[in-house]
Length: 481
Image (cartoon, rainbow, N blue to C red; front, side):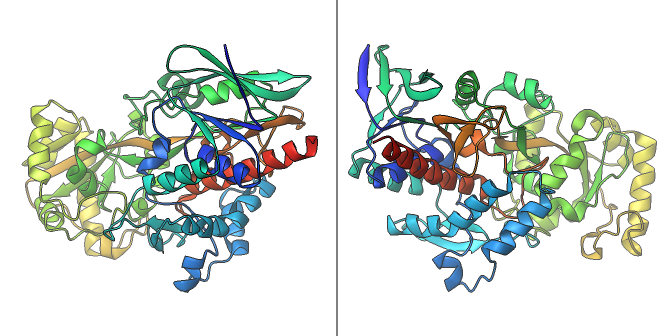
């Protein structure tokens, strides 16, 4: 068995782990990081940018949102269920973290909203060409900074166990690429493995959703929940765990044109052929995902006609889906044809509303009635949900289209209980000395729903809680001297 000596041992080199490594090393700690894949960044490499409040960039843009206001928005949205000290620590650090990243050479285009009623907290990354970048830009900079500070990385080396002595975390055991066990003897351990969003068994056990049947979330390979299990085995208390919910068509990444069309604010019905949601609220994907999750079969159908389709084919969307990488739906018909050829049961086209309902499995009589009522509302007002008149488009002109919408998500949230210093706590709220957690594994700052009104906060929490964990771990190591 190979032995490695360090002050701080970090489990995984994703957003939280990398931030923790740099933060601890900047305070003089000897840091070793074990990553089970061959690269750093994890699923954060695909993100568009982190949350931040009172960053230099926001001040340049004259964004007036303050940390106090962001804290109140977050806590009110979540009914003061999360740990307020942890939320405050995250928000208070977030603007400085954007500056910290900029000092490493990371560039941001702007602080943006995800939709009109959200806050401008999302710091969108910039590539050298000026287009939207991905999180890989951040993690390249963090990796280079970590290496510059002497952080030692072990790749293709999954961690198997957290080591404890006399109730304190004293290292980890991993298996390297050759199959040899590597033991890192350390004074502090940080767990940052990204949650359980890629583990269908854990998703079903913890949330009740069955992946591929009534949930079509991003299933990132390698995000299997091992960090949670190791921390629980080491005595960590469990927090509530949720999915970062939104909604989409099934296999969203294969059908971007269909997805953008069927997430516009048009007539939405359940399998009973009835409306259940104010469609203009589709701007808040989390709310839409919640509403659809409560319907029969955990699904719903967006209904449009040919006139509406032609508007979107030209790119004249009613609502902009910031997370969709296309500017128009010009390939709508091609994708619909491909979906039909592949035998999917998610998209339907017909010459009459009755035929459309039969094909989609929607109650025929109810859908006919609902369409008639909706068309009358389009001519006057929506008495049922008071939907904005700008989004009331009648369903009249054949052909008619239906797209299935299902619960989806970006991964899991929560699992390991931490305090505002990122110290892991047990069921009695006692700190487990030397053990820290950060990122998705410890993201319990949401109640029942992801706080979509302040975008970027999952990636933001990962990087900021990673910094907090790294700094706290380094301080703990110093206290032992």
